[in-house]
Length: 214
Image 1 (spheres, rainbow, N blue to C red):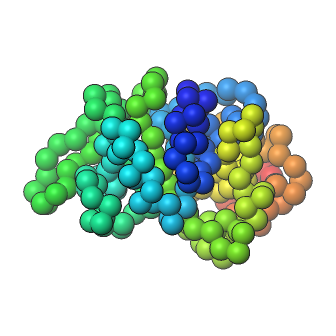
Image 2 (tube, helix red, strand yellow; image 1 turned 120 degrees about the vertical axis):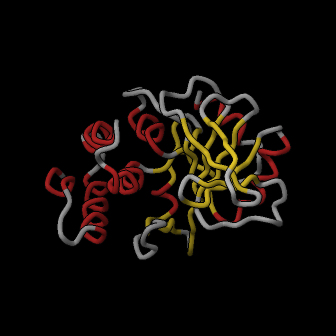
């Protein structure tokens, strides 16, 4: 499915990298578990271009606004941009359920996490870059050179495992995250593990379970 998603996105004229669990599998070059959806890292400056491209292909685009509330983006000139992620899906996608809410232009959104089986849903998560470096969204003082942040497997771009794990480190009880950590760190270089260790210390000065295991 990632190959098909890459074929779709590479024609859009913007930079991107698969992230989440699929990025770990691209790094390892093997499948380790099922995935609830496809996550893609992109940059803020390409947000409008991405929305317009996905809409041109017939996909619906919604931006998250917090509390399970989402805004249907029909015009790139009218966006709330309160969160860093947007969801794109085709009509009939079984992974999402939309219900009305009492806020004008907004709807409630619920997700089916049982596993994505076809290419009808993609989540984009937006990050910043500065001076050829990738900025970690939760602390922009944590950076990684773009050449090390975005890697490729068979010409498919993916986010480096140390960055993926840093994002996952805030919710380590979530299904599959510990397996991602165990599998990735076993194959990561000392340089990658050292960067992750320092980033985890910065974000968790009182300690973190993964710090003890590195």
